[in-house]
Length: 414
Image (cartoon, rainbow, N blue to C red; front, side, top):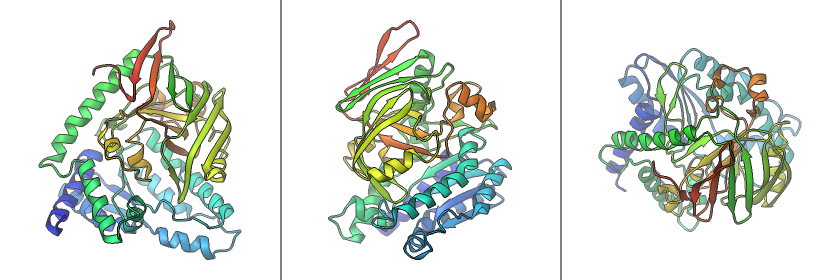
């Protein structure tokens, strides 16, 4: 990958984020939360935004190396503290109509070997303070997008047998390809891809299934679906009726399960990086919607902390389908990054459900949403269970069973 090609693809990446992901409107402001290790992309994004007439791009920077230093040296009783003004400011910008972009390429094992209690306290403080932003995202209060450009510390975990420079080069090549940035007109290709996903989720919404049955090695899970659930995927629509794409790349269609109607066991098929710690080869058993048993070969203490973050963290908030033949899956790379790994595999999310996945949901109070089956939590954590051995059935109100996926692929035509 030559320097010229890299710079050209980076500009395409920025254009894709602004024009397709955020679909930034003339004179609309942008608020960006980003790691300083992603600065080259953020700078290109700002350039595109200003050229399109954005009056103000505001960046809220973070530095994961500073975060690691805190966990190494700060007082052990200080980790419940958080600069609330940062997230309050982002939430206010969203309320005022700014588009919201998250940019991060985190080290998946940043906090490996450090004090688990301090990590738990800091994660919970972050989750509590992020909640107002998460609720606004769940309501589609504005256009929002998440992207994860490669960084050196991330790349060395994906390609551990390569030297640092080669690992970073390879990861950039993969990300550019999976975001279709190695093509002449990625924006046009993305619009075609989004249209395909929209057609798929419209079919599922019309089906109106009351439940889903998931079966694979280690997985036998039944999920109830609330009345009026809506499948989404590819594109979302903001409160101001502006189309946007929440994740780049994206290969999923998704909705919310009924929080009280999950029964059975699900086994993970990919590792989960959770705020700098790894959870691997884990399973969850549910009864009446709640996790009642769990195990993990690695990171079981982190898994325990996650599902006990608050009283609803042990209930599901999302079910998402991704065909096993998706481009990310076929890359045969475990990215150790939820944005990419969740778009290589069917996945579930523990915690908060998105209100836009329920008819009338964005207008509901949290209490009303909860009463009809939507989950409300400070966390929303995706984990992967899909594989080429997954079968999914949809169950209609009259008990009819229909094939949704077979062998990890769609069992119906769009």
